[in-house]
Image (cartoon, rainbow, N blue to C red; front, top):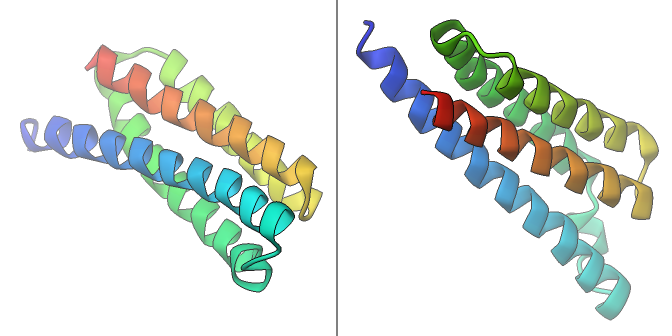
Length: 122
């Protein structure tokens, strides 16, 4: 089991970074498509996308960074990722618009940074 946990954590950190990048693309792409072209507002701005994304990010970060913290005993990846999840949660409360996009972009960047720190400390 000791050999499996680092492998799983490393894969989850990579998945978390990919999900963060996809979220970032979604935010920027939505702003461009909706504001610039007036396309896709009903689907791209659906609150369910953001709720599911935050739930998935919380689970992946919690497992990957939690396992990493237990292994390498460093707080930085955990603190950075939790700050990111806090920003993402704040974006849900902000409602649609520029505030939500800015909070989400900051949040996913921090979560990805937490995963990167976790991989570096492995």
